[in-house]
Image 1 (cartoon, rainbow, N blue to C red):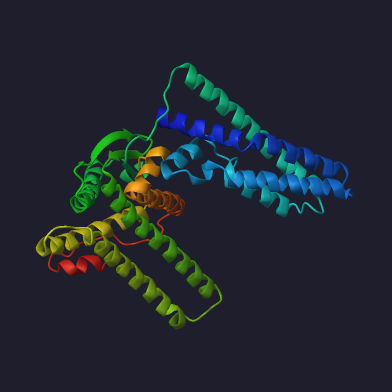
Image 2 (image 1 turned 135 degrees about the horizontal axis):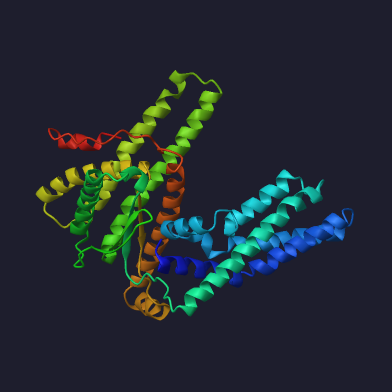
Length: 375
């Protein structure tokens, strides 16, 4: 784990808790709960508790930690093994209230909610102390001052196999080379740093490069999530003993949808290319192969995320008046935010095993067009 990145995440968490007054609201939530337990028939305490719950849950929904990028989220998951922050804490508290039937047995809910509050308080206090120590040692925060693409190679998949690692590097490099060519960015992408928790490469790049990577990976992740929902619905139909000949068209649609998605992403990227028709034809073949390889890697737990340098507010307003660049950056920021949220969802599924269980990709050298017909 990179210490500057840890400091950045821990500082964000502590700031989040202070800004949204989570510590105070959580303490009030427990106090109001105790009053309900001591006076179960007094409606004024029940009303006060409900009001306290609403305020705490609203504050948890507003926390920045809910929108962490995948790399920062992984750091959070390493230092906080329990659901003690943001929407995760809200869901945990709500599940306890519902599961213990707060209206009927508030004392049972109290027995489970108090330890959560104790764990939260301990975690927050420890994190505050750690930040003070980091500050005393003069440690600087890791800041993203540039556009960056990060690629994670899971250690459990590489498993020390240098040849496999080398092949992965070549696969990703081919895709990045194609994006570099299409983007026309004068800034050549380059490695900025490498993290060893997993093999995570942080790659500096131009804004157009980041934009096209984000577009492509977002579309792949959208596909994963949609196919996951299709398969879940299909399994529900099977559980209801719906005949296989009835559900077969759904399976066929899923396969066709994946094929079409790869073709659409390829065409979307080609639309940005300024090369001649002959080169575009070559790029089409290469991108089909690249995307099939990338989506299979994501299927087994590899990750690609993007971060971009934000323009300061004053400059953004001036750009918005003069060129409209600020609006484009705002749209890209939203796209990157969606990418990182989707990446976290897909990564969570990947940790449970292969998401889609796609077979290894094998390009057909005799028929380049078939290279997209493999999902």
